[in-house]
Length: 383
Image (tube, rainbow, N blue to C red; front, side, top):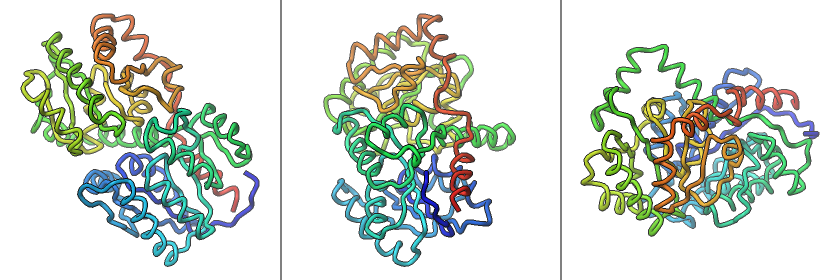
């Protein structure tokens, strides 16, 4: 990273719960440095779930676009963020703006910064599947952001190599590990140090699902757009069969509020005795439940990174992954939305102790929880 710029004002811009989780440790690190005036701008692409994370990490946004409206589509999100950021950047004019990952907020904020000739630092840069429609629209969002960004903080060497193949200057790339591990360790430490917090988390979860030591948990999350429709019906039917075949296990599914998820999930799974459909959890509660799970079935990207640090095998309900490192390390296995494959791979983890141990004890390729310090150190070095 060869450019020598003086940074006085930095801005962190994001809009969803996963972005907030992964940006939180960075914001904390920058706010502890007196050399920076650090501001936070949220689009509130996801309002309620975003606010939960902001409260957990005690982050108060300086700017809030508050764009979330019922039934908004990608056109709505993109245009509202772009127009909203015009005013924010005119008023604040940061020296550099940090964006994260692959959301539509990230893509639109990067474009807004480009229009104002403000430098963009891309956290979690370089993830690729090679298929612009999978995941959709995330793959396109991250590629567009990669073109507009000045600095690329890649979580792994695989991500770095993806950027190099796209002719990004190596000097503008830094491999850091993933900040989600930083956030995970911060929350686990917080829970470990506070018995009152732990008890509150258990009470909160138990209001929807009673945690007991004598029953193993299969934790499920699913919400991706590309699985809407037939894919989600396959997933739900597979979960129903797994539950029926394994009555000693509880399947716990915090169900995303999107009606495209709620409808098939509740139609197919509501009457299954050992399937517990609960509301989305706060990040602290979800981390605790993840730590209690036997294994996890998900279509989430972040969980593929977090679960290995907890020793939890992950079955990923996607046809491809921009996180091949976890697959290569053996912590994650792709099962797509194939009814039979979801059942088969789940049953292997339940029945085959060697298969379970092989996945649960694999090395986590996403870092040691020091990604934020590496990003901060670099930014300080270019002052």
